[in-house]
Image 1 (cartoon, one colour):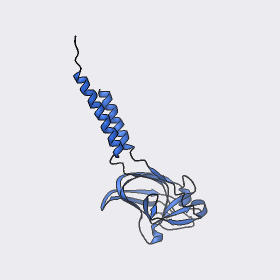
Image 2: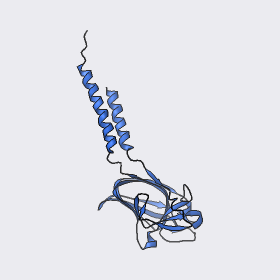
Image 3: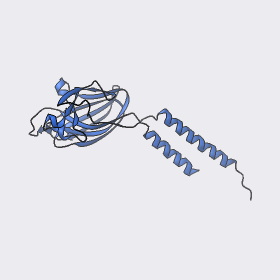
Length: 209
């Protein structure tokens, strides 16, 4: 019986953690010749101060070097729009899992990533980025409805551009996994109900010498 209960508990944990599957955004749409602003609606989220960049078409930059699939990446280019942050938001809670990032022009630049729920700052992490290739970043931000990205500092890498910009590819987002979905709850309840019934039957069994 202990083995049965353990197996059911393990299954429930797996179901709960897998209730929301991640979306990997490779930014291959829209198909652009060089650079095109996206948003506000993109891939089911609200993207503010972003663009899609064709890495090879745009030329030597962190936008090209960050690419891990296809030939396009996203530009966090708030500076182009007179803003500090490139943000992603949603009307319902979501998780920021990870992605591949690079600074567009400066080596040793600092990327600040902040996750909010309502007006509350829940997460804040900073990372050092270079232009030479992707840095695979893992965030683990859960239950947020807004994430802000900003980049600053660093030294010019010798590429043709300048300014505070970054590229990202294969960004992973998911509907928040903090609460199991209704179907998951139903399976969990059915499983524990079956375990309880089995336990009652065992107690009702009488052994005779």
